Image (cartoon, rainbow, N blue to C red):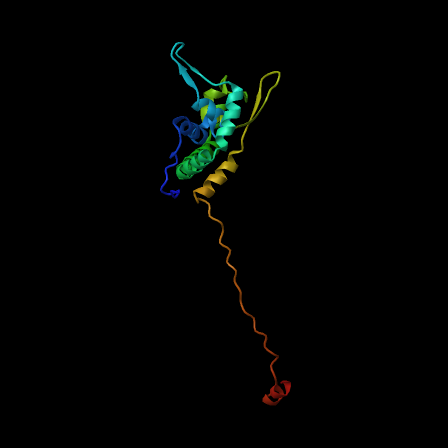
Length: 193
């Protein structure tokens, strides 16, 4: 048996199984969704109609589940995820920092008009700035938009960037020695012991 470190993640897989594992582990639309991964991997191109034909929903659900249960597929998923984890972590950290910066530094004037409503008709037009909207309350005269509290995100970002350092607490201990009251003479001193 080949050790996991020497083995490629796709060793022993058929081409469609390899596609299934790739869709299951690496694509946002089908990430950890066996049904969607099966639909993508096992779709066929119809030369007559020049369209992609997907398997029916029941087949995708049952076959995706069955395929995911096979040991060689489980091993391939485990190996592929282990291989791509560092890259995925780096990408997720970049996205998280981007979102923190967006929420910390957005300008309300880019989102709201003078009346407090949205500056645009569709939220898609705001792009990443739409993440700054906490709530939209529909009303008779127009929607009321509530934005997120930027200070919370500024604090998180500044802690990550180590711009704000915790206060250093210095504890000072001064030893205290108790001395007996001054004796009048050496003889009185010796008597106290």
